[in-house]
Image 1 (cartoon, rainbow, N blue to C red):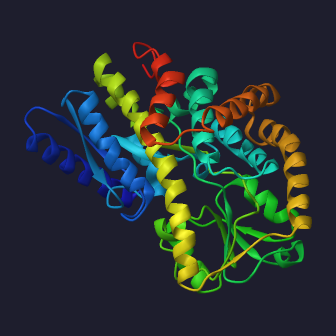
Image 2: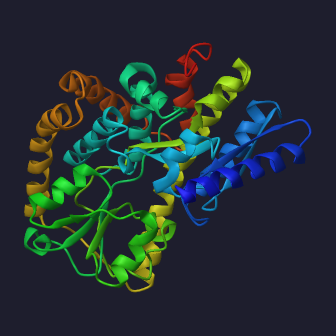
Amino acid sequence: MKRFTTLLASAALAGVTALTSTAQAESLRFAVGFPSASANVDAAKAYAKAVADYSGGDLEIKIYELSLLNLAEMSGGLKQGIADVGYLLTPYFPAEYPNINMAAELSMLLALNDPTGNEGLAYAGAMSEYIMLHCDDCVAELKQQNQVFTGGGASPQYGLLCTTPVTAAADLKGKRLRAGGAQWARWAKHFEATPVSLPGNEIFEALNQGVVDCTIQSAAELSGLGLMDAVSDITMSVPGGVFGGSGPANINQKVWQDLDADQRKALLHAGTVMSANAAVLYRDYGERDLKAAEQRGAKRHEASEALIAASRDFVRQDAKNIVQYYEEKHQVRDAAGKIEVMRPLVKKWLELTADIDSTEALADLYWQEVQSKVDVDRYGL
């Protein structure tokens, strides 16, 4: 409580300073919650430029990397107005966002296909379309937390960043795996490993001190979370799936409601830029970081065919269990029906993003397919 009281006071002072520093533009505080080396911060810089451009200079973004809110504080901080814009990871808050998290957990279905490299681009689009155009309960969850969703985000494929080799099911038995989502926690348990929940800024020390043996992450977190010096063995072929429970540029609802229609449209349009840059940069940084890790001595491993087959069997069964879990644990209404809405969206977006070759093309695709169809005179009001 003291932490939030201090943050509220600091945020108020920051807001006054920001508003007085620019006579014409309204300044919005963007809490990213990631370190400066991450793809998310670089995406936030592109977002800030897009907000200024699309609003005709009426709005500007002030980026706070880690100083305003960390990821564990993001939901409450946005709700209380400590930040105006925030990078929300909904799996950090299972009780608050069950409908969104259920859709995000279906990303494991991507592991049933051979990797393409564009899984994150596709899933960000699928989540954006699902939440903004098809899931009233998702929008209601965000409203309860005083937030407005302006676009989805998704990582590249998740693999195992470890301190020991993992290539077979036997290698997983007894391991402690940091899992950033319920689907990966269930995967770990299935293979007789122990899932561990840790915030991102504690993973390096946990690996370094042997608290966990692996973290289930995208390769881009080797630099994004500073894990390069703690990881010696990398297996990217399992478990698969992407981290799709992201609102990279969620807006405080009161801030949103105080804007005019053109400004809200500008933030929606800029939201596509944030989503596209985060997805593409995550993919590209992951490829870069894998090469850098190998150059520093880390070893790349491929999972055995038997482990891949066993992992895919788990994914097929787990997709069936998700319905029961969310209906019983979180009282999600018509979970089966909602999943059947999401499934074809994933397929659609895999096809739409198959030949995307730039962030500009991806942002334009997101805009044409999703955000341009949102009624700014009703959405979030």
